[in-house]
Image (cartoon, rainbow, N blue to C red; front, top):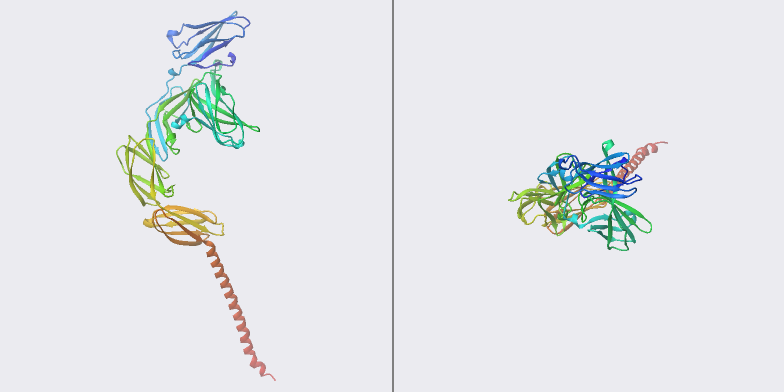
Length: 510
């Protein structure tokens, strides 16, 4: 309840006008529908006699109610007082998206459309996959030590709460939902938005991982749209708050706007959304949500995503590792619309399935790594294609801290440049069979080695800069000793020559 002087709540379908009279006598209060509907313009839809200090329901708006300004008339001893009330029937505020278009961009699916935004504002879009229906995950606060999360699964009258992970201390958990409600300040011709408590749960206690049901009480009529969720964790020493955003579609359908569905702002009628495909088919887009506000009322429109997408992951065998720097080339095929690549994963956009895929793989500058073919049978699926490769591990041993640059050259012009920081570092490579030259450079010193690799076999090459440095020191010391020896020889030879030259002269003296 708010004083009329501070603004009148903006109502929508399913909500009720409640009135509280401040007069010290009973007054009749009537409601007249919006003038925008000619058929109802003179209809008085409700009349109530309201006593002092009594909160009374006046009228509940149905789906056929006329959108616009309604009038609440209070008849007092001093005359009639008219209070305008704004009712927003979202069916009369048309907002929609056209047909959805799809394309691949690396590891993302791009969804585009043309929007009719009408008089809406604060628009956002996001796409969610099948995993969005598995509940809302909330990570434990770092300050409370346990690792894991609490998952909320909403029901018709309660919420299932599951604590998963390492619960090191007993704790209590509860949460609150806040929603942006608007007051229509007619005198200022403006809307004032307040984030009000819409629902709260009863605390549930956990001594270990497990589940419990929490009663959820709504203090306002539930509206579809965006909410702020405040989750509270309390143990014997701490009370921590974790905030996130959630899209409420119904009492039993919530979608996390913090991880399951990442919102992007709509800045024009040309809507474009990019959804990551990196987390697997369960998270790939199945529904696109358009969220917006009209005259202070939240709303959301849902659109099915009909993109037929799949993926193929190329792994090195028997190492079960992705192949870095690999390029996947795919030949045109029936039903195949587009392919893209992120790392060693090939993403496929098709018109229908099954789809034949003929591919060739290049690595590091055009080297022909492998060729093959496969069939992708279903949309929203992923499969693995294994490649037999050798594993080369290069050890660089050094007592210096200078960075080491590493370079590998192999058959068919294969060239790989890598970097090792610091001393005594190790780097591994997955390579096709053949003969390779491995060269490391550190502080102007170079070490090289030759090796032959065989598919599915691990090989190790060690490049030792300590040995090189010791050899240089030995050469320097040997050179220094040789120089000293030469000086001594020349000194001794000079003294000997002097003795021989002065001997006869002295002998001739009387």
